[in-house]
Each structure stands twice: as structure tokens, then as C-alpha cells.
View 1: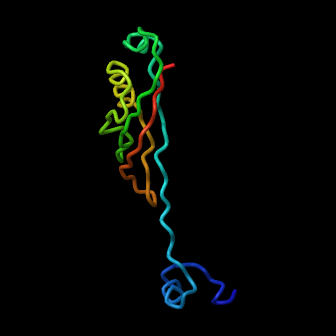
View 2: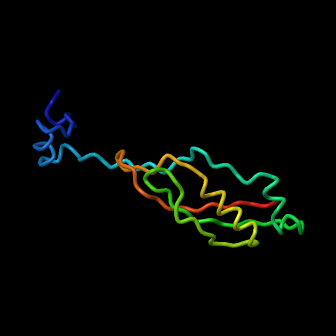
View 3: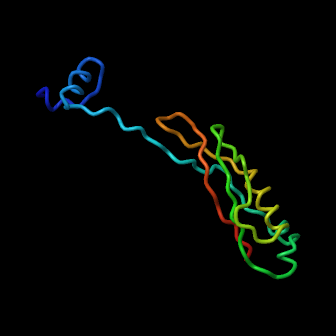
Length: 119
């Protein structure tokens, strides 16, 4: 193997190759949160909302952050639909669990949003 084909950034040769432009530092690997359990409201829970009683359809958008331990935090309505359905959606998202987002294997908080429909 020629010296120029060696692409490792190991401490023994990597520093010299990095200086010579023959080696690049590793690119951080970011991984988004992955749902472990994210159940939707039950039919019975939905039936209790005023929107369902009125026969309306629609959706609520909920924003939340997945913290490093994988729980949904800072859950809030960003696009409301009907107050009782909105509250049910917020309560539902608060129960969700995730594998947290990671950067090079280190967990970190990441925020996102979701839409929950009433049909």
C-alpha cells in the first residue's frame, strides 16, 4: 500500500496525512430521533371530544422536543383545531417515547412537530 492510498486518520500516520491533504477528519454522524412508542388516541378518547360529537373533521399540529433521554418535552399546539381535541393530542404526544437524536453517538435534544387528524 502506498502512503498516499492510506486514508486512516489514526494517530500514528493520520496527522501527517492530514497535513499533507491525504486524509480527512471523520464527518460527524447525526441520527434523528426514532419513535419507540407513539400510540394515537383511542376511539373512545376521540369520541369524548366536542369535535367528534359535532361530527367535524380536521387536524391539530403539535410541536415537541425529544430530549436526550427520549421523552417528548415542551409539547404545545402550533395549529389548533378544537380545544378538547387539541388537549387530547397534547396529552397523547406527552406519552410518546423515542430513541433520542444522536451526533456521533452522543444524545442531544431535537425539536420537531407532527399532525394528528380527526376523521
